[in-house]
Amino acid sequence: MLIVSTDPAHSLGDALGVRLSASPRRVLGRVVGLELDAPRAFERWLAEHRRPLGDVLEHGTWLDRDDVEALLDLSIPGVDELLGILEIARLTGGQGRKEGKGREDYDLVVVDTAPTGHTLRLLAAPDTVAAVAEILDALQEQHRIIRDQLARVGRADASDRLIALLAGQARDTARRLRDRAQTTFRWVTLPEAMSLEESEDGIDALERSGLHVEEIVVNRVLPDAPRCPICDRRRAEERRVIDAIRRRLGRGRTLRLMPAELREPRGMKALAALGRATASGSGSTAPRTRSTMAVSAPRGGRTIAPEAIGAFSGASLLFFGGKGGVGKTTAAAAAALRIAAADPARRVLLLSTDPAHSLADVLQAAITDTARPVTHGPRNLAVRELDAARAFEQRRVQFEAALDEIASAFGAGAISAIAGGTSDLVKLAPPGIDELFGVLSVVDARSEYDVVVVDTAPTGHALRLLEMPDAARQWTQVLLRVLLKYKSLVRPGQLAAELVEISRSIRELQALLRDGRHTRFIVVTRAAEVPRLETARLLARLRRLHLSAPAIVVNAMTLLPGRCARCRATSAAERREVSALGRLCRGRCAMIEAPLAAPPPRGARALNGWAQRWRLDREPRRLSA
Image (cartoon, rainbow, N blue to C red; front, side):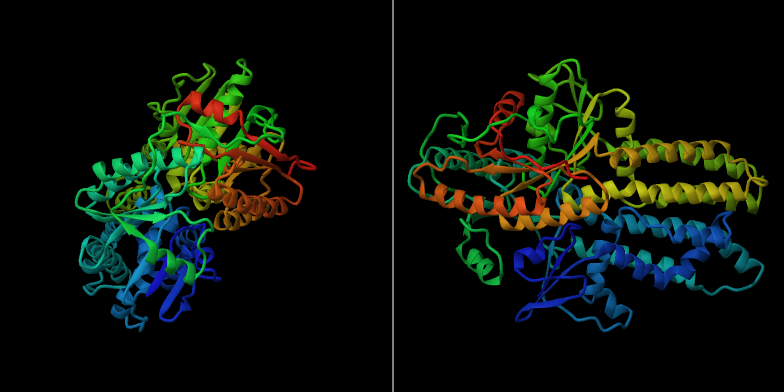
């Protein structure tokens, strides 16, 4: 059996208790694990197919070989999703057998995917690859005509074989994903209202794509125990959500409940025990309670609201990010509400860049790509869920118009066809490039708002977004150099203007991200071992990117355990994890503890009340740089 992770912020090795890499490693017995390195997989693929791919681009556009090679040397944003499924096919032997490479066969392959938005892109990769093959085929067609009619050569060349390979991979992988005899899908969620809403959207998207979800796994279900004010309300809320999952999503599917463990299961032995303890189709029981929210607040200590936290003060751009499921959207929304309410003269924008938006669920409001106030929120707060695909589509139309203008400079005939083919290059933009054009709206937003609070995608893709401006600027610089090279042949006016504008916006965004006085990245996590390990890697990457990370929000803390044995044991374990998180900061960031709330806060009023109970555990010696 092969267990493989496609999440750029891998946690599979943390869960298994072993160090994994992009090379298969035996974990236990016949179980093998690996954490996919999609950029490295793309480099390997490109090295193998660089020449025929370069031939297609040279034949089908007005670019010469030097231009093509310069483009192929650039990094490709969003390659994670594009290569993920195809790399799994290669590793599992499907493609390897066809190419005679003798890959090892596995009886079963278990794939740990990225969170919802990017998993949907991963599973759409076969359609993306098919579209790429179609575009390359169109670029190659003019060369085939010349080759067949003038050179009298009718056999396929290396470029034709590459196009056929891509089309075949896309077709075979799509068929394999949709074949229920070969592939099954398990959807993992939490017994929380927000998770239910995201699950409903995600499963619906999969089903519309012809991919059937056979089982729903509800993780971290609180088991029965003696009465406790907080646990009782948690169980009641979980039971309500599980009943809703059964009604709205359970028809024709297995519902499996995974009990919440006092100690997070790590290692094969603990995971095997959890699997044996799994209950199928039954919900937790709890006494009837009022529908009020119970908050685990401390008896003593310094409570503090977000607007009074030094790590937030003076910032004009606040990113909230962390591992999926830790509550970063809730923390971002609560902070934005409090910051706006504290100073009605400041214009505040709360912006979601996560493809699987949750702001609407947290705020219980209708939110779109147009910034607008929310019910019961401050009038000076606007909320927006970024439609990155629409942002890129607007740019794509502008690019194609500019490239068509260039094509018209070549006149009629074969030369015009080759020049016009260059506009197809825009369609080769990989998944993820839309997020770049979306996040550039942050630059525009700063001219309208005093503070922008950004709710990011989970760790791996949030980091990709923060790294993307560097890659995008390289692309614009290369394209501008190409236009300058051909200025005697083409009229690059409109395209050059578009590229100069984008380059300017990217430079502004780069400078803004690295300005620790105005831009801060607030790390949200939970006091458990696997989230802490991912938080350590996130902090290290942020430091390498020279981004300020002056605060860690440790969410869902059991701050007042009372006499409940479970709460007391949980609180003790959390205190140990908070101490370990504090050591990660090296005294350079504030440690903020957000209390566990049952049910989790939703709506502006509940979020506002919850944020007032945050606790500042320690102040930093200085703001991190």
